[in-house]
Length: 471
Image (cartoon, rainbow, N blue to C red; front, side):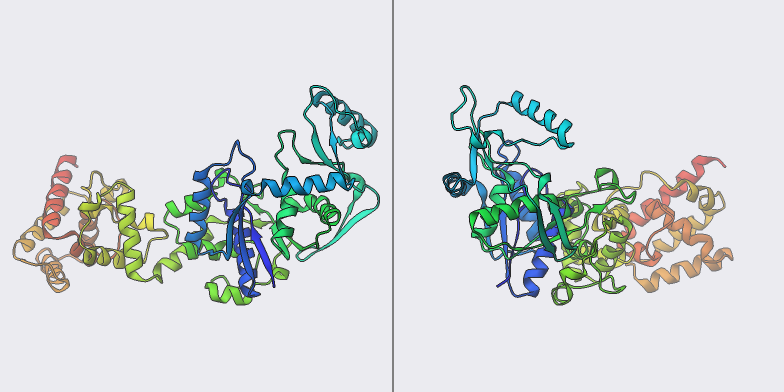
């Protein structure tokens, strides 16, 4: 049975690069009817926190990445690593190194001059006596003859010269095992058949293969996925925008949009862009993942999110919208309008919004007073001759008890006839008065959502503003 794992380090939020790796593992496992294991690599005690662990788990749940086993924590498995390290020492495949930090610096400088690589020269392989005042590390005896050759599912055959390797540390002087050691022990004892991870781990693979052989473990298949680069084709960083799953969630990106977006960063199926999870499980193949770095494109993510917003269940979208109203500090929970009203707002505003947060920003005028008007709109639509038109709108509103689409249409028809004008001569002026902007959903819809009381108040305010300009 196929068994894969995702093994994040809880030293920060779940990065989108890590999330994509998790998605690739999850899709591969689900497509092969295998198991997806979650393991927390928390041996970096100085930087790992419980808060980051919970945030990573929450982000994975939000993306819909369920796991079959785990989450296992490496700090709960230290006795296993100690036992395996002692076994390697007993079998003569690892040894204690008593070199002091100063001695190590001298060794590396000598080796840099000798062979161009600042590596350890293995002098403690035959040093049996402890060195006073130094806590030893445990080093693995590397075979530095010949080559390590492995087939990468994505990249094909990779050949690595063993003389580039040194006797690397597998247990630090404080007794904590290192990454390259624990990952091999864990993957082997958890029965991992395929290691799918970022290409930054390619140089670790020869070391790990030697450890697999020394420990007598079967060697899994490897697949190293390409990096994600920023639009400038440099390493993706915060200057390109949000880099954690949590940050995208807080911006109002839907999980299915981010999932779809991340899958397409490095994997393709013809020119098709939009997939649901069931389709991805069926279609995803590691062999179709590209070797070249994937280029991050935030505009494409917004395009995808806009698609999913337009096609998402309206009740679910309404709940998200209400959550954002509270989270953004626009309304308190007890101030939220009835669900039916929120539903009507979402139906109107979802067609233009690329994120849930954007939907809230575009509809802000429904909950807050308009404090300012779009400057270009003021110059075009708040001229003195508009005052009489707005006053006619107020006159018509006095005759209406309850706003309906039919009565709003009749209102504008009456104003147009009275002044012998066209709808465009008054529509944008009313829109600007209601929203403070020149762009919004349909005028009838925003009038209905604004309500008669607010509508009258804002038109009066606009009239006063135009008069105050004195133009």
